[in-house]
Image (tube, rainbow, N blue to C red; front, side):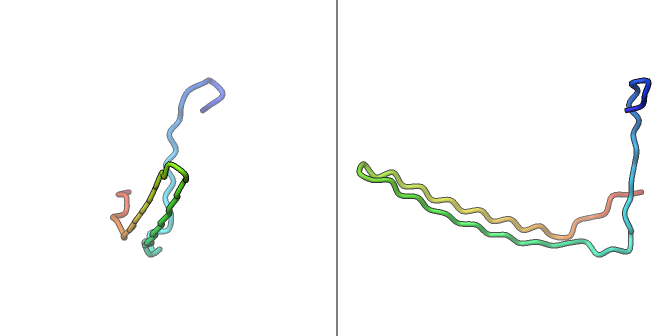
Length: 56
């Protein structure tokens, strides 16, 4: 934001020669509460593949 209170958009771009990233994550969890038995089970699976680059 400028001193006059006007919003100014600033576009920044990285090096176009960089290789796009890829990540795979997998998380599991479990919880058991007694005596009246409460059971919880979680599973998360994220697969981030190379996407398209933003156009310049």
